[in-house]
Every structure is written in structure tokens, then in C-alpha cells.
Image (cartoon, rainbow, N blue to C red):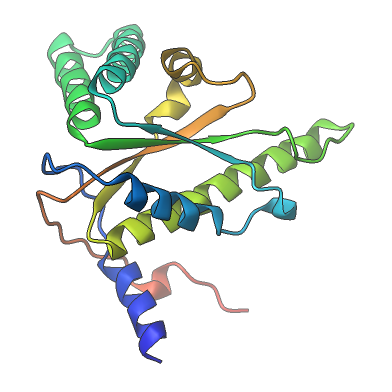
Length: 202
């Protein structure tokens, strides 16, 4: 019972934290978190997740800069005011470069099933996406359990080729999201909508 309570407590107390101290995260701890990620469920047990750990400041800056340029390009095309664009780009750059560690989550279809029709093939792709997302949740919970702060960032979905080029990824690695990670320098409180507003019982 105590183990079950601890798991539930970790789930409900975890928060998305974006500000971190400058303290480094040990490699051994990162390997523990990545191992936890790999024990999530996956479609056909094919484990389509791939991880890129970005720790070096020059690599974080290169990634953040490239993503920022793409963000600026997209928002400019949308007709967004320059002041808003500048603020969004600066905020994104700061979040990525000030986190001690970035963990990029990718998927590969290399080991997934192949179908002749587009509908089933699309579903197979979605199964891989879901598998990677569950791995991300495992890492988030493991990070929280070890006293780390973390936040899932979806921005790579909007610029997958930019991310691939910035990090020299293999061609079959498709960026899905990244987790910023470090020892927390903030606390946050969040609520959830009442369960009855989100559930149908049949």
C-alpha cells in the first residue's frame, strides 16, 4: 500500500518546471532517468523511442538559435507583431539554453510494421508517437522522484528538419518533443478540472 501511495503522490505532485539552478545533473542520474523511460509500454514492444541528450552549451545554443529562427520565420508569415515575435523567440532561447540538460525524444519507424494502405500505416505511426510520449512521461516522473524539475516542450514538432540538422540526427529519427531538465529553481501549483467533466461511464 505504501508503494502505491508513493506512486500516486509522485503523479499528483509533479509539475512542469522551467527554471533551474546551474547545478549539473550527474551522468549516472541521467542514465537512470533514460532507463526508466525505456520501461514504458510500446506498440508491439518495438521500443521506437530514441533519445538525444544535449548538455554542451554550444550545442544547446545552436539548437535554440536554429529553432528560434524558424519560429521567427513562421510568426512573421502569420503577421504577428514584431515585439511579440521578439519576446517569443527570446523566451524560447532562454528556456533551452538555461536548462542544464535537454533530452530530445525522437521516434523511428524502422522496426514498426509496414502496411500497404495509408490508413493502417498512419495508425502504425500514431502507435509509435504514443509509445514515445509514454516514455516521456516515465522520464518526467522519474526526474520528479529524484528531486529534479522538468518540462516537456512540443516545439520540435514545428521544426523537425531544423532539429535534425542542428543535432546531426540520423534520417529516420523524427523529433517529437524535448524535456528541459535540472534542479528546480521554482515551485508551481496547478489544479485539474473535476473528473466528472472528463469521464463517460458506460
